[in-house]
Length: 188
Image 1 (cartoon, helix red, strand yellow):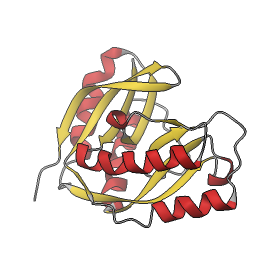
Image 2 (cartoon, one colour):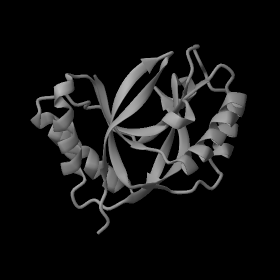
Image 3 (cartoon, one colour):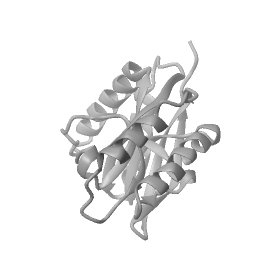
């Protein structure tokens, strides 16, 4: 199974992000948008692993959220990988209670190491992937200006009340996902 651990984006917030996606479709011809129902913020991507570690991964998530109450993040800016001007993937960065998110991520990473699993040592940037482009893309100044204008809108904070373990299933250039476990955050 291909596992990943993530924050699922609630429907009300997905609707706001879908508006951003529709604008991006107009601004960046050829962009392939992430299905709004599949928008999430990845904490850890584990890739292909034996199904037998599912329970251990669920326990790692459970342990990682100890004493972490629900928190909020808010969409804040558009960027891309490897960078905005030559992006293959476009994403929305978030602000807010990033400290809680980072504590959860580090605890999960420690748990993965205890299982002997490789962890990604790249700098972690909390983000929500919203689209991909295959062409050799170069952002033009007028496109960048319009993307900045889109993100000047007031976005509602996203309440994070659980962390999920997902199975990733490759499908037509994107991935669908199934929830395997949901671990709630407990209020103080």
